[in-house]
Length: 155
Image (cartoon, rainbow, N blue to C red; front, side):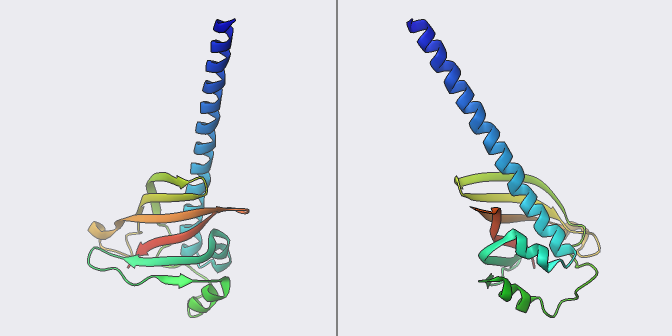
C-alpha cells in the first residue's frame, strides 16, 4: 500500500511540474509576442497597435552607449496620441524591419515579467557596429493578457 501511495505521489508531482513548465513556456511565448508586436507597430507607425500592447502608465527610455534620456511616461492612450501627433500617419519609421533575438524572460512574480533581448536595427538607421543593442522590457499580466509597462529603445 505504501508503495502504491509513493508511486501515486511521485506521478502527481511529475505531472504538476510538467504542467508548470508548460504554463511557463506558454507565458514566455505570449510575452515575447507582445514585445515583437511593439516593434512591428512602431516600425509601421501603427499607433492603434501600440495602444494594444501598452498598459498605462508606460515608460519608454531612449538609451545608447553614451547616454540615456529621461523616460517618457505616458499615463494614457491620449498621452500617446499627443506625443506622436507630429509623426507621419503612414509609411515606416526608422525602426521598420528591426530584428529581435536572444529573448530571456524572467518571471519576477506570476504577473510581472522582465524581458531582455537583442534588437538589430536595419542598416539604414545606424552604422553597422552600432546596429545592435541590448534591450529591456517589463510586462504586466492584465485581464487582457500581457502588456508593456516599460520599454527601452535606442537613442
